[in-house]
Length: 96
Image (cartoon, rainbow, N blue to C red; front, side, top):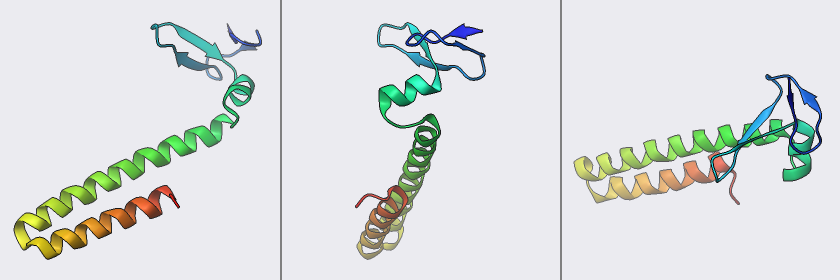
């Protein structure tokens, strides 16, 4: 059992969220305090973080394919690859 650093509530090890501070220390908070501090619940935060990782992977893969197409096939394929990369980024990240 651990205690939340903000509200003092007792938590199981599995439910506790650990936050690493800039000075190297560790702070333990509960999900309710996480929502109060950040304004979103932890499930939404975890979903967005995973989505961001997948978006970065997709964009890096598209950029590598674009460089390959530019070198092997020419400038036209490279430009088409850049357009595809931008579209993948826009649709994957839902940036509008």
